[in-house]
Image 1 (cartoon, rainbow, N blue to C red):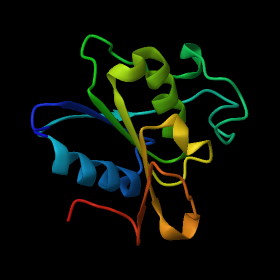
Image 2 (image 1 turned 180 degrees about the vertical axis):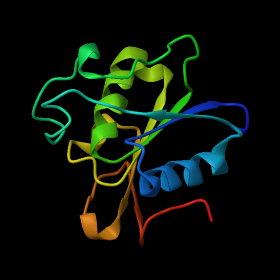
Image 3 (image 1 turned 45 degrees about the horizontal axis):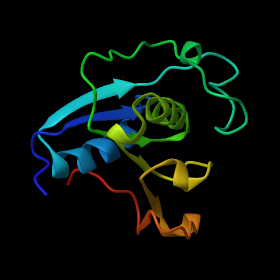
Length: 135
């Protein structure tokens, strides 16, 4: 499958460790990558995903829906909210990949890439030894 021209949105909280992981994977799939940073209002910014429902107004940053992504790659707790929200908007028209344990049902994503020590034993989970990155 040729993914070179597929539009990928990478979503993180802006920390370098998470950016490195999403960019590392995205660059292996496509050359068409847009980086997004998720910012949440309180209490979503402090709580683990799955405790509160997700609404459009919980995001301090606005998503531009003029260019719909083909693939969303997220990493980290705060980006789970964005990925789940965007999956709700785009439904099956987008593939979602989450890096790290999302702390919600992994079946909410098409794929989850998590380290072995997270012990996620679900069919859509790919296990790694250590963090993935662009090198």
